[in-house]
Image (cartoon, rainbow, N blue to C red; front, side, top):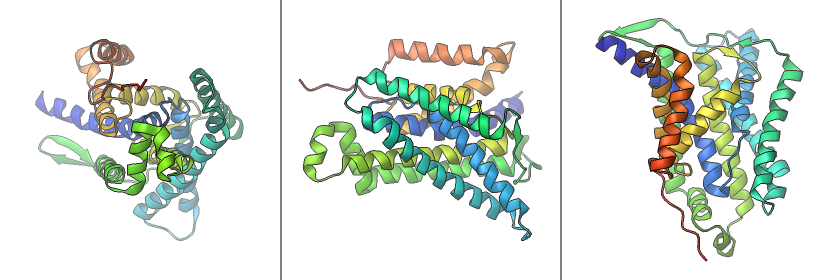
Length: 303
C-alpha cells in the first residue's frame, strides 16, 4: 500500500508543478491590477501548441539534434512568443479598460479566451495533436517507486523557475516595482517608475511561465486540443485562490495542493469524476473560513 501512495504523491507533484506554473500568471496579474485574467488558461494552451510546433520543426531538421537541445529550443521559442502574446493582450485588450468598471475587464478577459480558443480551432482544426516523446519514459525503480526521467525533469525545471521568480520579485529593482504597485499603485509614478512598463513585464513573465508549463504538460500528457486550457485554467485559478491570490508562494502551494486533490481523490472516492467536486468544495470551504487563502493577507483600503 505504501508504494502505491508514494507513487501517487509523485504523480501529484508532477501535475501540481504544471498547475503551480499556470497559477503564477493569475496571481501576478491580480497582484498588480487586482484583475483576474481569465484568458490565462488559453494562453497556456497557445504555449502548448507553440512548443509542439517548435519541437516538430527541430525534429524535422536533418541535424539529428539531441533531445535535450530540442527541449531547450522548444522551451525558449514558446516562452518568447507567448510572452509577446501576453504583452499584446495587455496593451490591446486590458490597458484601455483600466479606468472602466471592473466587470468590463472580466468580460473582456473571457472574450480574449474565446478568441484564442476559436482562432486556434480555425487554424489547426478540432483534431487532437500528439506531442512527440522527446524525453525517454523508461522508468527507474527507486525504493519501490517508478520514477521516469520526464518526471524528474518536470520537478527540476519547475523548482528552478519558482526559485528564479521568487528571487526576481524579492531581490531585483523590477521585482521591487511590482511589489510597490501591488501595495500602493497611485504613489509609484511619483517615484519615477513606469507603471505601464511594469504591468507589461508582468504579463510577459506570467505568459512565458505558462508556456513553460505548457511544454511540460505536453510532454507528460501528450494529447493537445484547442479547448484544453479551459479546465486546466480553472484548476490553476483555484490553485491561486487556495494559496492566496496575489501571493507568489501561495500560488506555488495551491498548485501542489490541487495536484494532490486530482491525483489522490480516486484513491478515496469510488470514481475520478469526483475530482471537480472535491476541488470546488475545497475552494468553497476556504472562502468561507479563510477568504484570503492559505498564504494571502487581507487588503485594507485607504479612505
